[in-house]
Image (cartoon, rainbow, N blue to C red; front, side):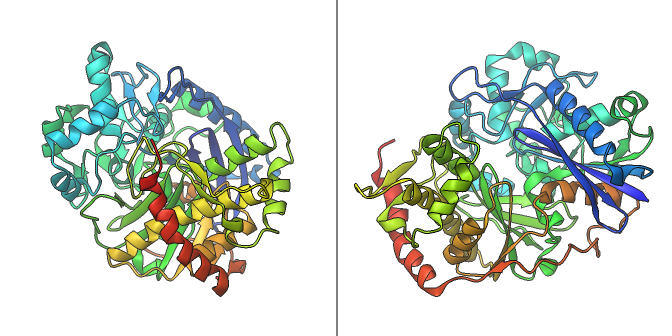
Length: 494
């Protein structure tokens, strides 16, 4: 049995998923690591902790009965986007990695659009300047920690730093690179012009290939540490959102047939695969390369999806291990509209459509009769309103979404129905809740020759009939209330 293992280096944990040569899952394991927020707005992680977590999760995965006697031939990579990991010439990190959620580089974020007018920046990169992206983080380190830059040979994304430890080879892929603000989206390459105008040394950026390419082989010391055979293939891999789309069968615009990914992870995304770059001139949407060669993605992104649900659970049921289940059960009994209560999910600022790190979340319209049930449903609906606003922007770019497939750690049946009503289209439950890890395993399988190219037919997903159709009365109510939701942003203090 030939096996490929997908490694998903997420915001708070690494997740491993093993696939056999028929595309069937053989098991999933996870291990967590912490984020250091030693100052307000800071979010750093120690790359050594990623390695420790990978070793733990791998030992648990390989101990599964389904993996006994299996021939592990490939590893594939995916991970959190927009990071900045500074490596020396030996591949060792010279400082903690800056995560996508690190917001310290606000001054540099504003400076980027002073050096490069927004219309020019968006036309080249497909994105506007944002504090979450990699470019302002590099500029901040160069300005405030020149000694770090003196030691730095390579600046890479988190999953690329982990892969360098596996193979000894430094490299990157076009999907992750397209989320740095240093990339020419149409050319699928680093932008020399952007790097020069921002004063970033192009020579420190890792060489790029497509995600399904082989990055190298597992070196002996890493193999011993992980309990794997030395010399197995390691794929380049890709960014987590496009990898999730691949993992759910959205390999291309043609394959998608009008279906978009609706991701309810820590943050939330609506992502569509497209055959040509589609760039919003105002930069309210993200333009990305897909992990599939010759394909791109359009993505609306919000910063607090499942994070908003986690927040209300902590607020209303602190320390209760059954709190989320109880609140969701109560919220399911509340009619659509939450009795007039509305929630803005801007708990950590917002991206689409505002790109405003100072945006604040809010509960609006509270009355004496409102309680935990209404508050919880309002949170789910607030995330839905935010993602529906992004979907409308995608429609304005000429996309014609017909259905959604929902995935992510925050998925539940109530939220799935709310999303169907909010987006006013059928929403299926993804056949795997570990979509990014499955996409990574597919990329590993392609690089090792276990599966055909991602541009052709890949392993089919298990059939899943759990589809929520929109409830017409709810869809009409949400469409009416969306006008109020969209007006609230401009009326709240920051």
